Structure formats: structure tokens, C-alpha cells
Amino acid sequence: MLPWVEKYRPKRLVDIVNQEKALEKVKAWVESWFHGIPKKKALLLAGPPGSGKTTTVYALANEYKFEVIELNASDERTFGKIERYLNAAYTMDVFGRRRKLIFLDEADNIEPSGAKEIAKLIDRARNPIIMSANRYWEVPLEIRNKAEIVEYKRLGQRDILKALFRIVKAEGVFVPKEVLVEIAKRARGDLRAAINDLQNLVSGGTEDAELVLAYRDVEKSIFEALGMIFASDNAKRAKMALMNLDNTPDEVLLWIEENIPYVYYKPEDIARAYEAISRADIYLGRATRTGNYGLWKYAIDMMTAGVAVSGVKKKGFIRFYPPKTLKMLRDTKEERSIRESIVRKIMKEMHMSKLEAIETMQIFE
Ligand SMILES: Nc1ncnc2c1ncn2[C@@H]1O[C@H](COP(=O)(O)OP(=O)(O)O)[C@@H](O)[C@H]1O
Ligand SMILES: [Mg+2]
Image (cartoon, helix red, strand yellow):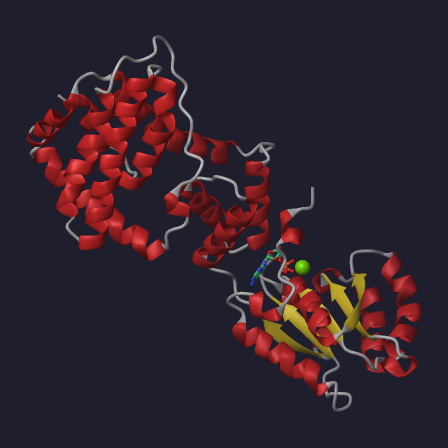
């Protein structure tokens, strides 16, 4: 399987997020090459890991039609090869060949002896040279002085979360929002680390205990609530189960809906449960359309108590399953946070007048 860091590496400069200032500098410098050799023949992309430096080089090459000759400073053989690459560097596209762009990754790992060679290369080069480093102050001075430094920012948690959402959506996999937030938090601005964590988690091969735990905790709470909602023949208890949940009513509705066929086995009971769900759905939709969130009270009654008393349940252990689609993955962050804050308020209020809603149960009698 292709690593997701490669699969989702932006091919175009516009898809590199939150590095606008750096990209302006890089583009201006590359374009200056089309009007002769610029004062600084080398660029030093400096910034934290996983912030888009390597991605920039390849997107740039893609857009400006360069062939990238990649050197690795920590690879001994690089220095032996420099002469050969120098010839490449001299070769402009007079033979119809693509222009060469020299890329020296990890310039902060160059040995002093290598530094001399690179400095010479920069002096003689007639093609663009881009270097990258996490710690630009560790790049030997004789090289650093010959390069224009372009700083890359550490990406924010929001940038990372957005990138992760894009990937789960593209892959069509289900990962709870809380887990994505956890991954984004832990990555500390390193998008490569975040994407790798996500891929490990999804492919199940993770040894990252903390992540797995976070994932399980999220599931446990909703699974417990499902157990209480379905196990109860008591409308009040079913409703209470939902109140202590952190999930919004529309999320819970999807969970309940998904699990109806695992709980009931008589067709007429299943039909009754779905009927309750569809009523809940109508109330939820109406609440969202009209802004009358008082209707959520009825929606919650329907999806908990209404479903709980729909018929005869299977005996013994019932395994629950997560819904195949979660609306929360499609909603915008803003919508979700507004909705969540309203939910909290309403749930709090309902908690105080919990007996009230039982009346709506009569519809099934
Ligand atoms: N600013 C960014 N915008 C979009 N994707 C990014 C950005 N920074 C990093 N990535 C993603 O993270 C991964 C590592 O990025 P890379 O450019 O190799 O990081 P580095 O700065 O360490 O060279 C790639 O998959 C890339 O798609
Ligand atoms: Mg890199």
C-alpha cells in the first residue's frame, strides 16, 4: 500500500497550506532564473519537519518543468557523485532536456568536508539549487551564506486536522473526530507524523497504546449508552443513558438506527423501532430548519424511549456496530461547535425536567 504521506502529497503549490509567505519567496526566486542567473543561486528552506519543504520542491518542479536531482547530505556517496551532478547542473535545456534542479535535503547534516564541496558546487552552478533543513543554524556557515533563507512555519493543529479530515474522507474510512483531534494534537505541527499515525491506526497495525486507548474510550461511552437504551424497558432510563453522552443527537440517532436489526428480530418490532427513529429524524430536521431546538426533546424521546419499547429483544450478549456514515464527518467545524453548545444547554435543561417527556410515549400505545 502506498504510504499516505506520498499518496496525499500536494502536486501543486496552491495545495500547500499555511506557507503563503514562504511560497511567494520561492516562486519569485525560481522565476528570476528565467531572466538570467540570480545573485543567490541557492535557496535554503528552513523549518520544522513535516511543514511542506520537500513537498514544495517537487510541486515546484512539477509546475515549472524541472527535473529534480536529489542529493542527501547524510549519504556519503553524495559527495563522490557531486562532479557528475555538476555536469547536470551545467546542462541547460539547449538539448531539449528538462532543466535540472538540484535538491539537497538535510543540509543541517553536512560534514565539514562535505560543506566545502557543496560551497564549491554552489559557486560553479548555473542551475537552481534548493536545500532544506530543520535546524538552519546547523547548516555550515560557508553554505548558509551563499543561500537565501526561506522560513517555513510550524503548522497549526487546525491545519493538521483539516488535512486528516481530507484523507479520511478520500479513503472512505470511519475515524471518530476525537481520535483525529488527538492525532493532530500529538503531532505538534508535524503533518508527516500525523498522517503516518492516522494510517497506522486505520490499518490496525498501531503499537501506539495511547491512541488505541483514546479510540476505545470514545467507543466505550457510546456503546455503553446503546446498551442502556436498548436493554431498558424503562423509558426514563433509556433517556438518561443519552444525557451523559458527549455526542450530538444526530450522531446518536445514526448509532441507534444502525443497531436496531441486531437488537430486535421480529419484523413488526424492527418496523416499530425504525418508525420511532424516523420520527426522531423529522424532529431533528425541523429543529435545525426552524432553529426551534426545543424540538430536540421530542427527538431524543423517540430515539431512546421510543426505540427501547419497540418490542421483544434478543436474549444474551448483543454486539453493537458503529454507523457506516457519520454525519459529523460531513459537517463543518463551525456548524458542529454551534450545535454541540446548544445540545449541552438543552440536555442540561432536560435533565432537570426529565419526567416531562414520557408523555410522548403514548404515541406507541
Ligand atoms: N504545508 C503543507 N500543506 C500540505 N501538506 C503538507 C504540508 N506540510 C506537510 N504536508 C504533508 O506532510 C507530508 C510531509 O511533508 P514534507 O513536505 O515532506 O515535509 P518536510 O517539511 O519535512 O520536508 C507530506 O505528505 C505532505 O503532503
Ligand atoms: Mg523533507
